[in-house]
Image (cartoon, rainbow, N blue to C red):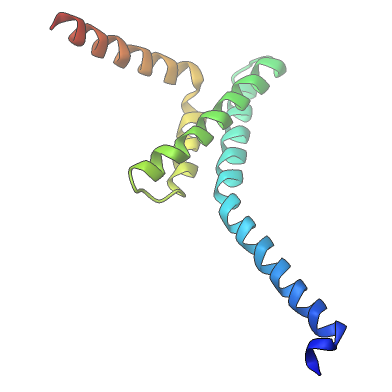
Length: 117
């Protein structure tokens, strides 16, 4: 009887394990790819710009973290999550300080408009 053959059950378990690993890799791949690319671009940009290694490493970590924060926004707006690779590359190329300045200015304008009413 085939169900009593231990080789058959081993083959079924192996197939299920392969499917589970493949699905995990498919779900996590965009996150790893976008974060790694963002980290490397930011690190290289900061080092080429003459920054110290420790500060460059911290900025690269911030860029990678900001890139991960983009994924829920893309999901919320129904956009393709692979856009995070491009957005992360842009964030890394422009830098955390530039992004902070832009967001701070936008937030200040919103608060000023809201407080005037």
